[in-house]
Image (cartoon, rainbow, N blue to C red; front, side, top):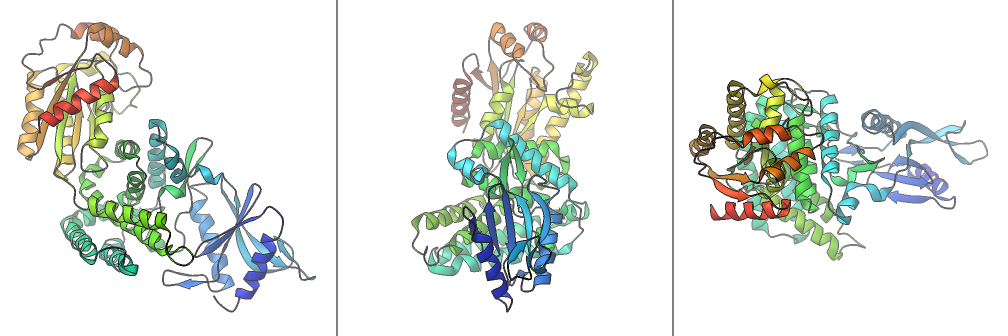
Length: 507
């Protein structure tokens, strides 16, 4: 505390005095909740990473928080208001007297609607997961590029900082901490040149910086990012995938693997294809983020919470996740083929979360590739000439190129297409062999009536197939498939179980 802490304590006492006001304290701020309003005040503290020790610095920090967060969450952040001392000695919010403190004037939201609370209450559905990805992608699109060398040089510092923080309290074994640090530094050495390349190409930007689930709230059924880092621009200036990695990691921590898979795939589909060439960084990025959260949990293990088993368990689970993420298993390639209406895309998306490394395989869909070729939205119907044999060959070649890029980064891929021709199936099988990864081909089969019914039930999908197309496909000469044939005439759950069995049998 500084010598102006007495004024601040008087302000805090005045703001907390009306009935019904709730005060929430963190290490750097105090928030006063009153009805639909929230007032956030920077505490008069100085740490190595921030300095709020004077009134002028706190005012500037409040103004910066509004500048950074209002574009992300205009529903929450409004303005900076003065807390004044009036001639009669009273303290008022936005009064005419002498400013003795400053606050961020915000709308109060339902604290139970932050994603960490929602994750504990149950599984996220696909629509929510997609909306999370869209919100993050939109924030990254609007972020200002920064060709800063400081970001890359900060990564070893982050790794060392995690090691030092995790040693506090003897909660984890020294050899575990050392193994995490050593493997993390080795991973950084392998990907450093790739990160340098991304920096030069504009993928390092002023990001949110703190995108764990507690900093995303559902308002009017839409995820809103809030509480972005404002006190240190350098800390928030990172590779875009490092920003995304915090959300992916925290979804895994909160037992939301399907949501994590959807967020990753939706984000990749909405952002430049060059992100496929940086998937090698995700294990390190997610591991660093998990170790940071383990440290945050450990910091709460102080009186009167020094023996709280739930906090220690949270720290342990974050630390174990950091260890697991930094040791990704070998990637693999899975192809899902079958005539239109057999449920290929539903299956590919359901399989993805369980295909390591975390947070699951990248799903590459021929229908989406074709739409990208023509520069149209996923749901815009293409004319018949988009489905000539020549264009089909281009689609499958592009699909293979994308899969090759993913596999080259040590990440798994699932390619989703009809694969009606032997040459198409042979090509993807050969791709796996060339890349030196394990391959499983699944070919889904279902009767015509089932396929036509499913196609008729589709809405807002990338596929242009119609029941008439399904009938024409019955005449295809598919030839010798050579892949595992999966009965897809039953429920989605049955097809998923049969496909998992085929993958397990294939090794």
